[in-house]
Image (tube, rainbow, N blue to C red; front, side, top):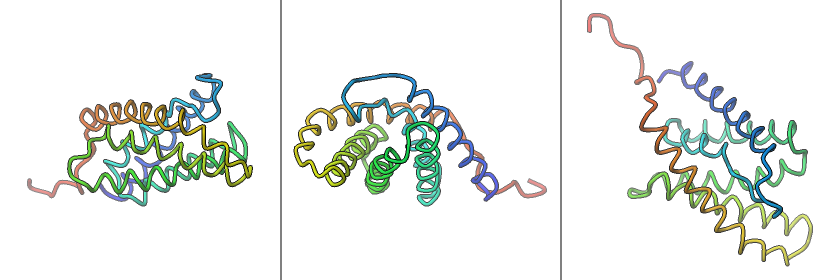
Length: 171
């Protein structure tokens, strides 16, 4: 895939993540703070299998900033960025280890996202007792990560991206 195709793919992934973030913001899932479906994360996880690591970081940061500014506010940006950074870092590391499926990578990413958000909340609010939230958020994050991993598996198998470069003349 050439540079222009990669940029276009990144833009489309950010746009899709924004749409899913908007939809997700309108769906009340739980009264427990921090529980979300994580629909946009299936796009990021799919991108992890299609794009270089730096591109994945760019689309994650862009999505967090835009979603925070449009749908949830500046404090949500801090929590989402913390969760997104730890989650993406762990998913990138696991992606390099043979034997980890997108489902396993998604589960680890979902749990890491919630862990980072709770730690961030503890630091900002100076409330160590928030650690009890992890009893709920870690399994939910892993469960939703499994769903996003399953969706990423389906997407990477069904959507074929352009091959490297353009065909040579005469072939």
